[in-house]
Image (cartoon, rainbow over all chains, first blue to last red):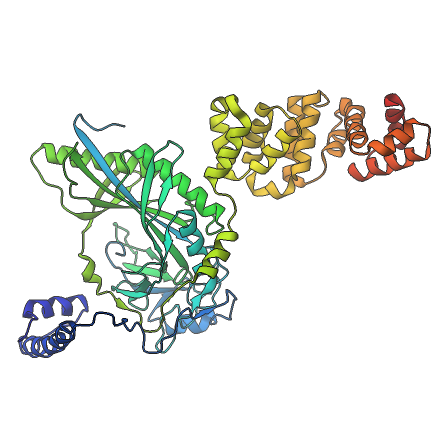
Length: 99
Length: 475
């Protein structure tokens, strides 16, 4: 039984800047609903005393020393920009400030 | 400023500090302010496909130092992706900590006696810097933004207080004390004007005794002055709105320093609009007790402790010197003051010269040794230098380095020449009682010992015959 609503899928698609047709919304609501239901099934199990799996490798504290490494050449960086000005990436103006 | 009768403001602060590491949080690009745009970038901080982040151990330790200083519980933590689309974030997500931050809980005791709870202090990466061009009626101005990614990936700690602050003055005290702690831990240079410490304020109002009201988040607070003005403006705005029968809408507001007002930036998004999920390229961070102990052992005394030391030294003179004491603590000049007090310099003088002359030229503070500071003040106190002359000597040492006696001589502060020599000789006699008693008993060879010591202390500036005369005078 699908627990996911069509509006939820439309909302997430909007946040991810994805345009979806009505047919796609129907299709993905059903598919994603199955994924969530599967997670719900596992949630229903009695897992008292089972340690959560944080990462499949079981590694912790992977760090590097605070030492400089070479950066990319400025020319290489700017060549990747769709447009550039003043050594900076030029993009369409976005109104407002970052979240 | 106080609110109208019956109203109370409730404020919590989010303080972001850039960490003083050599390199960025997840790559080896330099963490530096002021370099040419897009010269400190690599595939990781540009978010190029296939690049992988590796956590900077120094950033972790500075975050732990901040947490330790704030009495937080250092906890097993994880990293999440905070997803949003904005050109200053080339990956389209920011790596941050979400439900399991490295520092949980804690508190900060303020000099005014109040305590503000700390909810968390977590690690995250900074974004790039956008400059907006055009618009605003410019005729030929292109309507676009320019982005510099040098700041992208610089390590940050965000310190979130509880909603415990009840006035703009208390908010200022909290921010100033926290800034002092960030500097004392070595985590930050504390420079708000360069953006290395940035503050957001969550402000709501309520009638006294009622539940919490709806809050607004105020951004763009770039100085302690802005913080105070913005909180006062926003609280008054909300009271007026509510008294007029309106309601406060939960939103993010922008502080305009020139207009002295806040305005709507955007209606607050719900937390899950960021679609947080675990960063699969980073593993858990679980500092064990030994690591936590090493960080704790490496901490220098915090401002509160240093303030207590000085206050105790001053005894009943502390209240009168409170302002100078705060300047001295804030700027980290207490070693100068304590050494001067140890040398029996009067407290007024010991504080005044630090809080004025040194504070005025702080960028050159390394030119002035504690010994030179004390020596100059001793000369002033003994009358060998006038107050003006002593200030001149300190200003000169700060600007160009050097040693007080020779500078005073070169400036032609005549009284000093003999008086200061007497000071040096008296000090040597005090420090070398054996040699002095043998010299007094007639062992003339020891005059050479004292001359040698005087030459060392004055860097060869003294006159040998004058030294002998000064010794004879005391024999």
